[in-house]
Length: 370
Image 1 (cartoon, one colour):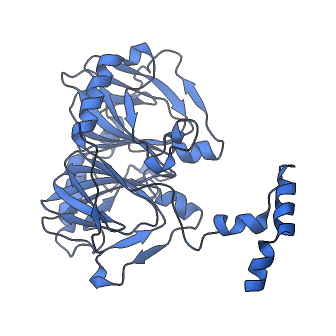
Image 2 (cartoon, rainbow, N blue to C red):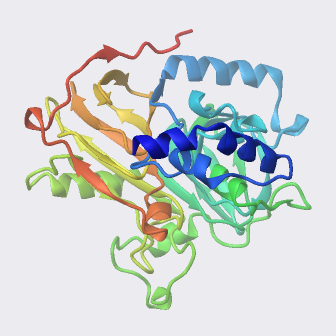
Image 3 (cartoon, rainbow, N blue to C red):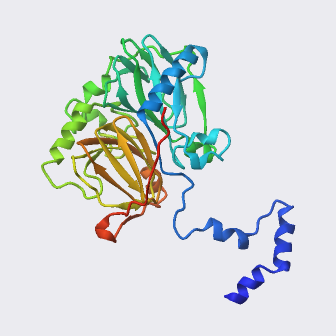
C-alpha cells in the first residue's frame, strides 16, 4: 500500500493528471476518494431559525413590496449556510434536495396563479381567511392545515380575511434544478376563476380513510387539504399505545387514492412529543425540515443542542445523528426527502448503539436574533 501511495503521488502521475485536465477530461484515480465516500457526507448544515426573526423580516418585506409589484410571492426561504456555494441563489436549498420558506399574504392581496414542474406543499402556521386556488378549486386555509400542490397544477392565493396569513412552503426546487427539469408558466389571467365549489376535495373526503369509489384508481391530488382537526385526532388515537422510540407519536400525510406519500417527492409528517419525552438517537439517508407547531424543547444533532419553541424552524441534514427532547407537550410538523431516497433505493437507517441510545451534548447552537 505504501508503494502504491508513493507512486500515485509521483511526478509522472501528477503531470499526467494536469495534462488531461486541459482537454476537459478528468482523472478518476484522483477523484474517486472524494466522490465515493464510505458513507454520506452532506454539505448541508444543521441550522435553526427563530420565529421572532422570521416574523420581523416578513413584516418588513410587506413594507417593501406587494405581489402586485412583482416577485410572484412574498416568501423568504431558508438558505442553508452549507449550500450557499450553489449558484444561482444557493439553488434556494434548505437541504441538499428541498426548499422551504415562510410566506406572508395580507388581507385583500392576491398572489397570481402559475404552474411549474416542482411539487409544492404548505403548512399553515398563522392567521385565517386566505385561500389557495388549485385547478379551479378554492381551498380555504386554517392554522394546522396541510395542503398539497403536485407538479404542473395551476395554483394561486387570495386573502378575503382580516388578519395577516403566514404559512410554510416546501418544494423540491433543488432536486428539479439539479437534474435540469425546471419548467415555469404564469397564468394568463392573473388568478384562476373558481370552477368547483369551495373546499370541494375536503367535502368529498369527510369520511377520513374511506374514499369515494370514483377515486379507486390513483389520482395526483384527490385531497388538497388535510385539516388539523383530523390530524390531531389521528395522533390522539396513537397515544393509546406505546410511542415510537425515535419519533414519538407520529403520522404521515398520504394520498388516499393510492396509500403513497401525499406528494410524490416529499414526505410530510406530524408528530407529538409529550412533555418529558426523550427520543432515542438515530440517523438516516433522508434529510428533514421541522416546523415547531406547538410546544418547546430541544434537538441534539451530531452532538450540538438546538433549543426550539413554537414557530421555530430547524434542519436535520441527511445521515446526521439526532434526538428530540420535549420540555412541554409539543407538535412538530416536518418535511423530508424520503420518497426521493426510496425511489433511488438509497434509504438506510441506523440507531445509536452507545450510551443507551443518547448522544453526548458537546455544544449549543446560538441562533441569530433580531
